[in-house]
Image 1 (cartoon, each protein chain N blue to C red):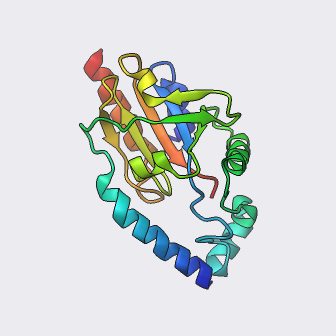
Image 2 (cartoon, each protein chain N blue to C red):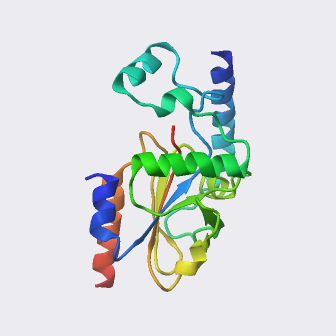
Length: 62
Length: 135
């Protein structure tokens, strides 16, 4: 239980640091280059600029 | 309307991308598997709550992302955030969050943090508004 409590405190600290910096409506979306699950294909967000809108869905298994 | 429904309706007009990020509630972190809440999740059959550790290498992260994509079966392309969490930090995305980026590269919709702020209906409304504006 202590481990979970400690992890929760770390998450709160992380949020306090990064949430205020998250992009807001009208901001330029931060670019990234990430690989797909196989690791064989790299995709940049900017690849879609002037071509298609992008819906980004962030999440994990748990 | 579920995320899957939204994807099926708009995927010809909008590129959907899932970004697998750091585990929110792994066994070795802020685990929700203990206590009464954990018992309820186990009864409900949420398998992930039982056996997911936070991946420590990019290969481990790809493996869990692959399992997640396969079991949730959204059909949406999945990218894996690097182990130092660049995308997660840039978008303050933990545990879940959605954004809609317009064709000009600017944010059209910035969803709230999950689980309470994760609202697929808001994303759908933003997509419709954006598409209507450009039609």
